[in-house]
Image: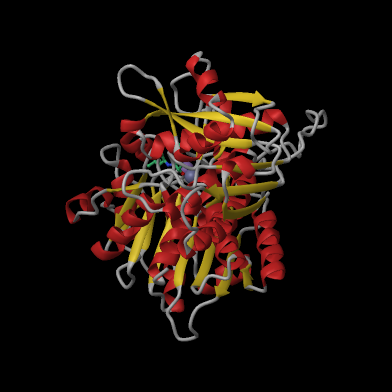
Length: 501
Ligand code: BES
Ligand code: MN
Ligand code: ZN
């Protein structure tokens, strides 16, 4: 999918499909043409208005109506897209409208399209916002994961050329930059989605390491992969405890993109890479256990974000640190009650082997200290409790630095990949008390996502650190089961904003 942006009068757009938005008036619900739709309607001597007057376009944002042979227009077809009530038009309606248009274009098999979405005003947001969201939503809707199906649906001709058109105003430099950012971000999201969707017998720790190798080659990144013996030599007792039951060798991937000033301290992204989480000896119930293949989504988002930043040649220094292994039961597996020594020197009583994410993360976070980072953000499908707290809308945000937290909140709001702050108060720490080690790895049922974050906080005292619990946002269940690619858009936007972009 190639994106371009330009100022263009809709009546002159030479394209397979011209996509125009239509609002509804409040109350009565009469159609209200957007600026571009109104211009096209004038050229078509009122044909669009006449068709709409029949009431064939439903009032819901994202509904569509396809027209052929519209007089006065160069375009082969016109796709009218409902935007919902003009008064209520906001971020979610915008995303729904673009998604609806994309689905219609997919079904149509359009090869190219000219869309007038970038110029729509969404609250107080600048044109750059609409450009970014439109490009990301389009690419997202055309994403397919069918590499493991032998009976492929007839391959729909993919939408190869997308023009985001603006009518009656100039294309700003910010809008052009936004499109470049979005196109690269979309590639990162697609990578994260595919890594998440791949089954656990394919997407193993070694597979993730190979994927990092591919990225390193393609984008000339620095890469180091620590093996089990390196972890043993360093003393990563917590990470090693999780991998014990598995036949797959563990890896610690360190991927560097240094696009910023030589002396600028790097942003370190630490991604949980459990390629399958059975729970270990504290075995999970069978229902939906397949979804624990997504337990490497943090790792996928780190690789995706680095791919995006390297792809757009962003002026930032980012280091991805990905501890990756499987959590399996077995004769060699860690037992509830085992006490291990972490890389930090602190000891942990593993009371529940299913609280494994924090165990691999604590050693990776200690390891991150050596990069003298500006900030460290870990991304993890860490707790079911976070899904209960925030559902599938917001990612849980925990941080030991208020400025960092605020920057992440703002980046999430801007990327429309939102996070919500959760407490890291000292009062919760006592839940991690152990009679036999410095701490336990679980804090009981109350505030499960908070005590998990409080555990990590014990390993990040020397760092400016934030933790993103993406258990509710990294994938969807049910009929639309699949990885979402979140929070790649947030991470990319944060890294750029942090570098003043
Ligand atoms: N990977 C899971 C968290 C998870 C569970 C994400 C369900 C999404 C949906 C994590 O390793 C885990 O098992 N956490 C336990 C922690 C508990 C044992 C303290 C949980 O959330 O139940
Ligand atoms: Mn677990
Ligand atoms: Zn897990």
